[in-house]
Length: 299
Image 1 (cartoon, rainbow, N blue to C red):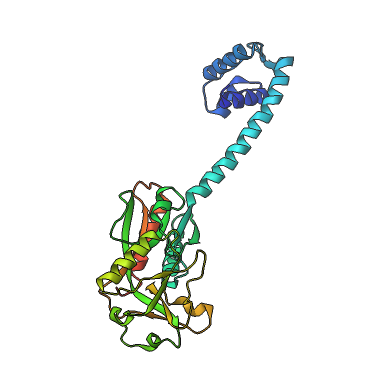
Image 2 (image 1 turned 135 degrees about the horizontal axis):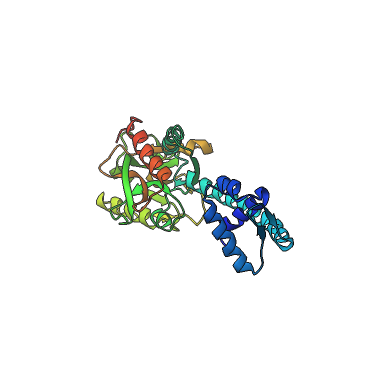
């Protein structure tokens, strides 16, 4: 039985008047009468005794309608909870990327605050370092990503450039390259180079390897063990890849240096699904692009 019919029977039982009940339900008296007749045929007994003078519940009708009140109340409760859940889903945007990078995190936060001025939004931010994000976006594990665009991109995703990040190194303060000015790709010739573990970073490592080969750096990159923090393993090794200046937050004697040579850089983008139709997601995506454009970040 249609839940609206249940609501109509409960309302009619309260009013015991077709005109008043129809007015409360915003339907016609004839429509209400037809619906009552339909339900009575379905259940096999009369719910209401009705005449030109009055409307009253039958004994079985009173039992039936009393039960319907619980059904209607339960329906309204679960519907409200489901709508609240859907509203929460509609306004929560899941953002993933190397958000320990202060530039990226501040751009996402500023964009979220701007969107919040005109619509309800909640932003869930997940740090995923430089892991590949395309597959996670396509599979729906996130709504927006900030990350690096490599030579090959997914046709299912929309990319917008934010800014460029240079290649760089992290090394012990005693390493000869820690104070080299300017610092170029050629200065890394012969250096013992380390990088992130291989797991979930295939595109990143392929991009770094190709750049290294373009600059005639033939030393193989040693990859750290899975789940290892990306730190130089010895005082004579360097972490090579994207420049993140935030190593200082870990303390110690680690120095992070960008390469002054920008013939190769990382293209930092904000990315979403091409088929995305959630207005809150689209708003945040556009706001991130605008905030990066206004942040005076030099390429």
